[in-house]
Image (cartoon, rainbow, N blue to C red):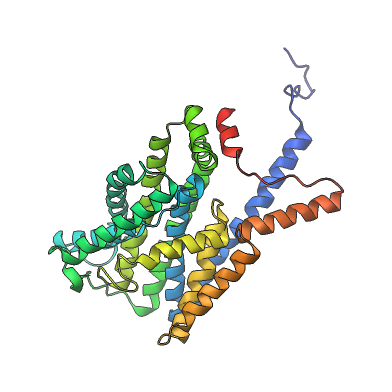
Length: 367
């Protein structure tokens, strides 16, 4: 069809420019908080550079943000509660220590360049672990992942090449104190951004719909053609890779790694912390696990510094979690989103749209 000179081209059938512009504005409005949060995170070292204590807390918070966001890719989207991701965290920690020691890698950025290999190691370990654990259903799966974690912890404690209970020292970094925490902070921030981007891509993909279909009704999803074991295993391996990188970063930041104890490579509290952070912020959401990690890890670090000898921080930490879960059982982000939805509906005088619930994933696969 020809168009007369000076006239506008015809609008495509079904196209509504006003609606398209409104959708674009909504996307930009939804993206604005993420951009603001990223800007605040990027500027944090410029504000707190003189306070090395707060800077180190920032590094730990970002490491946990990346870990819980990766954990959420599997547990949040599939509904399978994994309590064994410390296996991948510890494997990444030992991978960077062993590679630096056995390959005689010099300290500095050369050792930092090994971090992607830590993710590869964690991903490879996740394949056999997932093939064993994912043949069970949800409740049994939790027990199996815990058992596998203790197997790996025992191996790291008793094998000769891991250094046993003494652990392994990593190459000594000669970075100045003024830039040490700052450099690790930005490396961790890059890992967080990459992991959140991966989580966002999975959630918006057909693969993510299949995961959520499994979460809603696994038998029905299988009946509709979802290859459940393959999908779960893929998500399990995908979630292990950033956790392995985070473990390697954690080990290099501390300068040494050992198998057992508080803050060790294979620490059962790590798995509990990931689950608490996910549920606190809102499991299965993008921002919920990040918020949970920000609140709980920063609070734990501060309370540890204040009450390091008597364990009072554990009581405060647990009480805060119980209060939030009792008042907002779905987590902070979903609860606040529902309240905002209801408030907007009341202002516009219409019935609030129900939040996506059970069956949404299966319906998405069916389309």
